Image 1 (cartoon, helix red, strand yellow):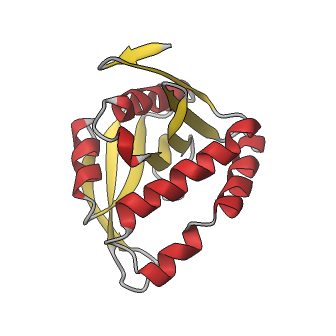
Image 2 (cartoon, one colour):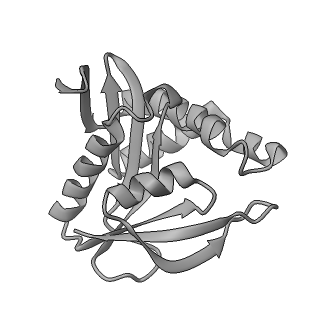
Image 3 (spheres, helix red, strand yellow):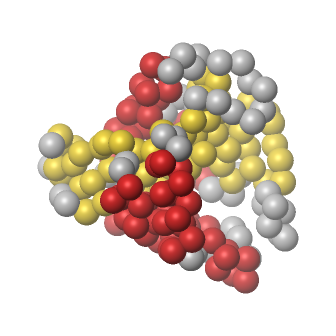
Length: 173
Protein backbone atom coordinates (compact mmCIF):
# COMPACT_ATOMS: atom_id res chain seq x y z
CA UNK A 1 0.00 0.00 0.00
CA UNK A 2 1.13 3.50 -0.85
CA UNK A 3 -0.04 6.74 0.70
CA UNK A 4 -1.13 10.10 -0.65
CA UNK A 5 -2.31 12.88 1.67
CA UNK A 6 -2.76 10.36 4.46
CA UNK A 7 -4.81 7.90 2.39
CA UNK A 8 -3.65 4.34 1.82
CA UNK A 9 -4.16 3.22 -1.76
CA UNK A 10 -3.04 0.72 -4.33
CA UNK A 11 -3.06 0.81 -8.11
CA UNK A 12 -2.91 -2.46 -10.00
CA UNK A 13 -3.99 -4.21 -13.18
CA UNK A 14 -7.67 -5.10 -13.05
CA UNK A 15 -8.69 -8.76 -12.95
CA UNK A 16 -12.04 -10.34 -13.79
CA UNK A 17 -13.19 -10.12 -10.17
CA UNK A 18 -12.87 -6.31 -10.46
CA UNK A 19 -15.37 -5.99 -13.34
CA UNK A 20 -18.31 -5.18 -11.07
CA UNK A 21 -16.32 -2.52 -9.21
CA UNK A 22 -15.13 -1.01 -12.49
CA UNK A 23 -18.72 -0.85 -13.72
CA UNK A 24 -19.77 0.91 -10.53
CA UNK A 25 -16.94 3.45 -10.83
CA UNK A 26 -17.71 4.36 -14.43
CA UNK A 27 -21.49 4.57 -13.96
CA UNK A 28 -21.31 6.66 -10.79
CA UNK A 29 -18.63 8.89 -12.34
CA UNK A 30 -20.78 9.52 -15.41
CA UNK A 31 -23.63 10.58 -13.11
CA UNK A 32 -21.33 13.04 -11.34
CA UNK A 33 -19.40 14.39 -14.30
CA UNK A 34 -21.74 14.42 -17.29
CA UNK A 35 -25.29 15.17 -16.17
CA UNK A 36 -24.93 18.79 -17.30
CA UNK A 37 -23.17 17.87 -20.55
CA UNK A 38 -25.21 14.96 -21.95
CA UNK A 39 -29.01 14.91 -22.34
CA UNK A 40 -30.66 12.95 -19.54
CA UNK A 41 -32.60 10.65 -21.87
CA UNK A 42 -29.34 9.68 -23.59
CA UNK A 43 -27.00 9.38 -20.61
CA UNK A 44 -29.26 6.76 -19.06
CA UNK A 45 -28.19 4.33 -21.81
CA UNK A 46 -24.65 4.44 -20.39
CA UNK A 47 -25.64 3.84 -16.77
CA UNK A 48 -26.44 0.13 -17.01
CA UNK A 49 -24.01 -1.46 -14.54
CA UNK A 50 -24.58 -4.99 -15.85
CA UNK A 51 -23.76 -3.95 -19.41
CA UNK A 52 -20.68 -2.06 -18.20
CA UNK A 53 -19.55 -5.05 -16.15
CA UNK A 54 -19.78 -7.29 -19.21
CA UNK A 55 -17.75 -4.75 -21.22
CA UNK A 56 -15.00 -4.72 -18.61
CA UNK A 57 -14.98 -8.52 -18.46
CA UNK A 58 -14.33 -8.55 -22.23
CA UNK A 59 -11.64 -5.87 -21.98
CA UNK A 60 -9.85 -7.71 -19.17
CA UNK A 61 -10.07 -11.03 -21.01
CA UNK A 62 -8.61 -9.31 -24.10
CA UNK A 63 -5.71 -8.08 -21.90
CA UNK A 64 -6.42 -4.40 -22.48
CA UNK A 65 -4.62 -1.97 -20.16
CA UNK A 66 -7.09 -1.46 -17.31
CA UNK A 67 -5.87 -0.23 -13.96
CA UNK A 68 -7.96 0.05 -10.83
CA UNK A 69 -7.29 2.33 -7.88
CA UNK A 70 -8.37 1.10 -4.46
CA UNK A 71 -8.27 3.60 -1.61
CA UNK A 72 -8.73 2.50 2.00
CA UNK A 73 -10.35 -0.70 0.68
CA UNK A 74 -12.78 1.04 -1.69
CA UNK A 75 -12.43 0.63 -5.47
CA UNK A 76 -12.60 4.29 -6.48
CA UNK A 77 -10.85 4.90 -9.80
CA UNK A 78 -9.96 3.36 -13.13
CA UNK A 79 -8.10 4.01 -16.32
CA UNK A 80 -8.56 2.16 -19.59
CA UNK A 81 -5.85 2.58 -22.21
CA UNK A 82 -4.28 0.90 -25.20
CA UNK A 83 -0.91 1.08 -26.92
CA UNK A 84 -2.69 1.70 -30.23
CA UNK A 85 -4.97 4.50 -31.37
CA UNK A 86 -7.67 4.97 -33.97
CA UNK A 87 -6.21 8.13 -35.44
CA UNK A 88 -3.07 6.94 -37.24
CA UNK A 89 -0.86 8.84 -34.80
CA UNK A 90 2.63 7.36 -34.84
CA UNK A 91 3.83 5.48 -31.74
CA UNK A 92 0.87 6.90 -29.85
CA UNK A 93 -1.11 5.15 -27.17
CA UNK A 94 -4.61 6.18 -26.16
CA UNK A 95 -6.33 6.75 -22.87
CA UNK A 96 -9.99 5.94 -23.49
CA UNK A 97 -11.39 6.33 -19.99
CA UNK A 98 -10.20 7.73 -16.70
CA UNK A 99 -12.76 8.02 -13.93
CA UNK A 100 -12.95 8.40 -10.17
CA UNK A 101 -15.87 8.34 -7.80
CA UNK A 102 -16.69 11.93 -6.90
CA UNK A 103 -15.69 11.49 -3.23
CA UNK A 104 -12.12 10.86 -4.42
CA UNK A 105 -11.76 13.89 -6.71
CA UNK A 106 -8.98 16.27 -5.72
CA UNK A 107 -7.12 13.83 -3.47
CA UNK A 108 -4.11 13.27 -5.74
CA UNK A 109 -5.07 9.71 -6.68
CA UNK A 110 -5.79 10.57 -10.31
CA UNK A 111 -2.25 11.88 -10.73
CA UNK A 112 -0.86 8.61 -9.35
CA UNK A 113 -3.08 6.62 -11.72
CA UNK A 114 -1.99 8.75 -14.68
CA UNK A 115 1.70 8.17 -13.88
CA UNK A 116 1.12 4.40 -13.75
CA UNK A 117 -0.73 4.19 -17.07
CA UNK A 118 1.81 6.40 -18.84
CA UNK A 119 4.63 4.18 -17.56
CA UNK A 120 2.84 1.12 -18.96
CA UNK A 121 2.27 2.78 -22.35
CA UNK A 122 5.91 3.92 -22.47
CA UNK A 123 7.04 0.34 -21.72
CA UNK A 124 4.95 -0.82 -24.71
CA UNK A 125 6.88 1.52 -27.03
CA UNK A 126 4.60 4.55 -27.08
CA UNK A 127 6.31 7.91 -27.55
CA UNK A 128 3.12 9.91 -27.01
CA UNK A 129 -0.37 9.46 -25.56
CA UNK A 130 -3.65 10.94 -26.76
CA UNK A 131 -7.03 11.35 -25.11
CA UNK A 132 -10.32 13.09 -25.83
CA UNK A 133 -12.12 15.29 -23.32
CA UNK A 134 -15.32 17.31 -23.50
CA UNK A 135 -14.61 20.98 -24.07
CA UNK A 136 -17.09 21.83 -21.29
CA UNK A 137 -15.35 19.51 -18.79
CA UNK A 138 -13.08 22.19 -17.38
CA UNK A 139 -12.12 20.15 -14.32
CA UNK A 140 -10.82 17.27 -16.43
CA UNK A 141 -9.09 19.60 -18.91
CA UNK A 142 -7.28 21.36 -16.08
CA UNK A 143 -6.18 17.99 -14.68
CA UNK A 144 -4.85 16.78 -18.04
CA UNK A 145 -3.03 20.06 -18.64
CA UNK A 146 -1.41 19.76 -15.19
CA UNK A 147 -0.26 16.28 -16.24
CA UNK A 148 1.48 17.75 -19.30
CA UNK A 149 -1.15 17.07 -21.95
CA UNK A 150 -1.58 19.78 -24.58
CA UNK A 151 -4.66 20.48 -26.71
CA UNK A 152 -3.43 19.87 -30.26
CA UNK A 153 -6.18 21.86 -32.00
CA UNK A 154 -8.21 18.82 -33.08
CA UNK A 155 -11.92 18.92 -32.27
CA UNK A 156 -14.89 16.67 -32.99
CA UNK A 157 -18.56 16.59 -32.12
CA UNK A 158 -19.67 13.82 -29.79
CA UNK A 159 -22.40 11.44 -30.95
CA UNK A 160 -24.95 12.77 -28.44
CA UNK A 161 -27.88 14.82 -29.78
CA UNK A 162 -26.63 18.08 -28.27
CA UNK A 163 -23.29 17.52 -30.08
CA UNK A 164 -20.89 18.45 -27.27
CA UNK A 165 -17.42 19.24 -28.57
CA UNK A 166 -14.52 16.94 -27.71
CA UNK A 167 -10.92 18.13 -27.75
CA UNK A 168 -7.88 15.95 -28.41
CA UNK A 169 -5.01 16.30 -25.97
CA UNK A 170 -1.57 14.78 -26.54
CA UNK A 171 1.41 14.27 -24.25
CA UNK A 172 4.90 13.31 -25.35
CA UNK A 173 6.27 10.57 -23.14
